[in-house]
Image 1: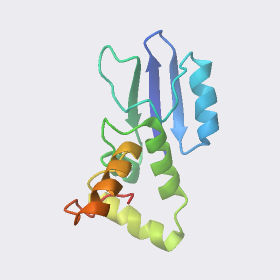
Image 2: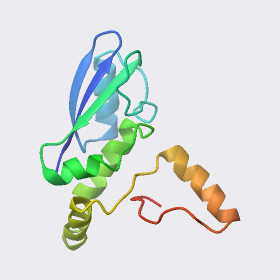
Image 3: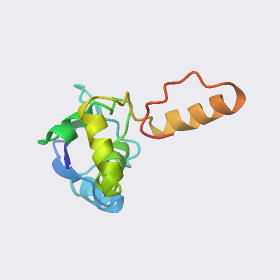
Image 4: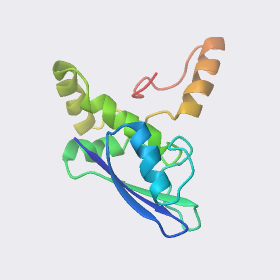
Length: 136
């Protein structure tokens, strides 16, 4: 399962990457088209006027459903990590994970910032957050 990313800088540089891949390779490829931001700082936004625009797509059904768990607030690094996690899951778990993805059993992947806020909130109070997120 592969997620593809089309990344465009406002300066006109365009990059097409397939995930999962080494985060260091992502850094290097971004720099090759003049993007100096970290993959952790690049959100999955495709709005006119953004410094960096990102479009994600997948050609297989599992990948398409996996993309539904990513939101505009997630980062390029989040998309890469998510693809890596699914791609490297143990075979018995991966089969169940893929079936759950195909049946849209997951709401969203929390971004790094959201996970930090979430852990602070739940450590002080009883959690009322959905339990269907892909990452704790």
